[in-house]
Image (cartoon, rainbow over all chains, first blue to last red; front, side, top):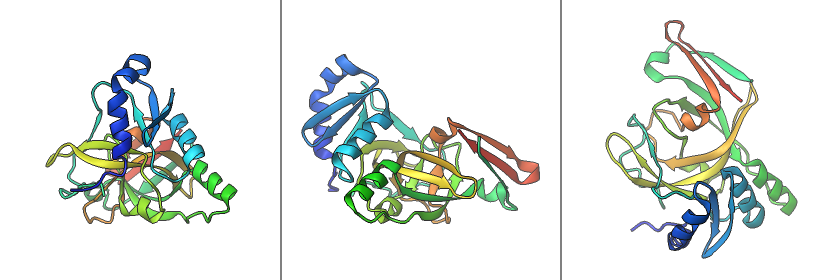
Length: 86
Length: 144
């Protein structure tokens, strides 16, 4: 089982998702561990505050949406064994 | 708007490939300097401009070499597999000669061995122009 470095942050997001959706849908939340640091209008603003506060340590910046966005790739340049979390 | 125009004999076979440098973000570089930490040197590599990629991808060894920690997790799908979870890293990409720069999220993944270490996807193209002149083996890429 691959360990997700951001598991705690993702858990925090899920625990607070309904509240975040009702208050800030479409915005970007900055989470560190079990703490929701703040909500921002843009992705860049959230990342910049995260770097300023926490430097080069894991934190989560996530768009607050009901259904998770996925990224799609039409070619097979990305390897099949691309289990990326490690 | 700065732009790069390239001619490639193998444009049809390889696609539009450009030389780029990856580095840590400007914000992290500033923080490192304030803290007296050494700033990792940029990594020179090749990127394919891929209109079939909805977002940018970087070979996972590159953010690792820059010592970066992830700031996101996202699911990706390809023709052969779907819903793979990958880390996202906030990085700076520069096309050195023309001074074209972009800073944003890059998905770290394993790429097939074709001497390509990054895909420039539609999230970057949303801020730019790509002109592909196949019969001249030439393309032009511009970024706001």
